[in-house]
Picture (tube, rainbow, N blue to C red):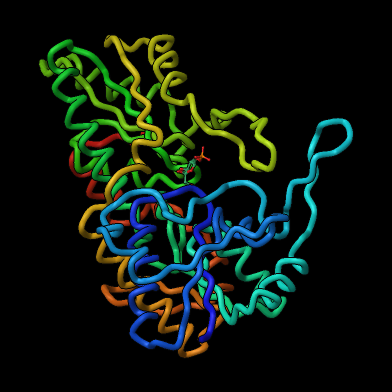
Length: 365
Ligand code: F6P
């Protein structure tokens, strides 16, 4: 039997299990491939004690396609090119363990790897491909920030969760005559904020791609507040910032975690509104990881299943160094190089942004 390794890396996202199930079920039809899973991305292979599990047909039954999270667990720390090593003084430094990874994969007899991950994971896959690894990528992230695919799975689920939150905040905003601020995820791209602001009928949407002018935000809030409606809903992406301002973030103290930890912009905005003549009282809700947990929507299950099946078929066809993608309602493949070249920012000239403006949403510009 030939051996294939599957892993999930980066932040989790609804639909990961549906991809794993798609790979395993499709592979089982060939009766020539064994599928194994590495626990916590490549860490299962890189750790002193190898942690890989065999994925048989039965390990992916019991409806795992409908479950959130990942049966293979995941991590946002470390990786083959940045393995964290604790120093004598207690600090940590990164070590390149990619050569060790490749030799261990060969030792374990793996002929190919399917790596399910976001922008960072796909960049790692590209680097490993350049070093000779037979790797296929599957795009995941709730942020929808990979440009080579129209949608990453998990995004629709996150948007649904955020839209449900706006719907709930509308009713309490109305009861109390308040400005409700909802902070959603979106590190550098405001896709979740934009979609949920339109779906939920918010009046203000603040995204990383459009630095906001607080006076313009106050103007929109006050006009809406004073026009007899008496309540306002604002959706703000965690990576949004005022013109000339910084993103709200803190350095992480977690060993191996290289990102800054975003958060706090909702509360900052509430203070800015108060200090700049906003007449409405405000309250802040941070939706946080509720956007990442739980069951995927039907759309994400279907997309993730197609990705899983296609990724395995790419292994069969030896289409390595490529990523499965969803383009114009079809499943296609793109090179990992192309997939990681451009970041998928919200196009501020797009019809989506125009439509948002058309229903009176202010971006604070
Ligand atoms: O990249 C996806 C994402 O959900 C970002 O929007 C967010 O900033 C980040 O993950 C949070 O990561 P963590 O779970 O590591 O705090």
